[in-house]
Every structure is written in structure tokens, then in C-alpha cells.
Length: 276
Image: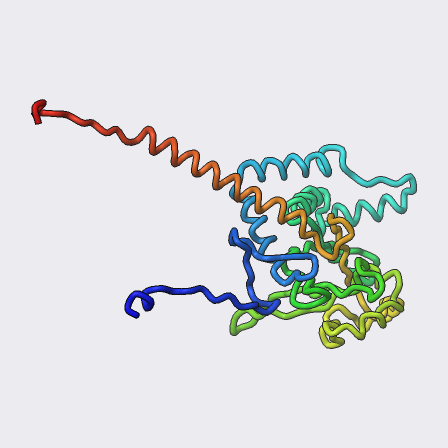
């Protein structure tokens, strides 16, 4: 009996979808059907891009090829070109400086979210939304409400915004319509039956200005560049990156430790009494 008391046996239980679940290697368990932990993988990818020289160099090469020297927008129509220049060069956007960075973030995290804010004077303000802030519900925990019969056609995004108050910082979920709602405002009714849809959470994306009536009152929209293969979120891009980068780093550390162990120690044996 005393011997049996010293043994311990693991008991495995099935966690809830919203709990942090990891695989055998310690990575957040994420699949195309359960995307609740996707933001953790994206944060790991971002950390690797900042710390791993091979990943950082690749990202800089990629952004240079996609949006480096010679990148730009042009039109043969003077009025169109004037509007493009205004949007691109305005300090609120500074898109010639930011487009390469947008491309870099899409390569690091596998997708890109840009929020377009429409001003009543016709100006379009472009803001970056970190991919890992799109979470907190939606279809399959993706943070996105999709069309019920078009599973890769987004209607609304659940963005986690932090508001500063006198008491501190608080996080609020804001529903921001997809650019698809700007093109087809009547599709909003398709999202109303989704459990994550909340009219109250859409109010911060609406304006009472009559200029936005044709968009159901919405004045800002999200454009999503998903680099996955017709998936709701690009899981494969970051899983195939972060897992194998970690394996590579682990192997290099073992190699360094092995070289240290073989070169740092020298055992010297001397025999004083040969007869003994």
C-alpha cells in the first residue's frame, strides 16, 4: 500500500472550446473549425518575426518585392489621380510608407485587416487593425460573422478595442461591417440571426449624417486580405511557420550546446602510483 501511494496517474479531460488547449509540442491547438486560440498563434508569429533573424530577413525581402521601389497607383484621369494622391499622401494615411508594412504584417500573420473610415467630404481614412484583435465570437470562433450560405463571405467583424478612461483601460467589442455591406447593404439582415450579432455593438460604426444613409448608416468598413485557401481564417500559413521555426531553433540550440559540451570540458587523468 505504501508503494502504491507513491504512484500518480494522469487524468485527461475534454476542455471547453474557449479554454486554452495546446498540442504535444506546447503550441495552441487551432483548427479551421475551432479558431478561438488563433490569436495566440498570431502573437507567437509576431514575436518570432521580431526575434528570429531568418524570419525577419525573409519578411523584409517579401515586403520589398511586393511594395518596394516602383510601387504606386496611377490613373490617366487627372481627377482620379488627384483623389488617389490625396488619399495616399495624407498624413492620416501615409500609405506610401505604410503599404510595405501592411504587406509585412500579412506575411507574418497570414492576413491583413484594414479599416476604411469614410468622411463626409469624400476623404477615406485607412487604419491598420491587428489580426489578433479580431476575435471573441463569430462563426467557429473566428471573430467574423459570415454569410449563412457563403462560408467565406464576411459580413461583420468583431474587433476588440481598448478604451482609455480615468479608471484605466477597458476592452470593448465593436461590430464593424465588412466592405461587402457597403456594396450590398441589404445583406445585413443575413447576419441578424447569428448569435454574435448585436445591434448595440454596431452603434460605434454608425453615424446620423444623412450622407451615410445608403450604407445603412455605417461610416466605416473593414477590408480583409485573407491569404488562406478559401478558409475563414488563415490557419495553415501561421501553423506551418511557427511550428517548424520552433523546431529549427530547438535543433540549433542543441547543436550549440553539443559543441559547447565537447569543447568546454577536458578531463585530465594522472596516475601517481603505477603499481596501484
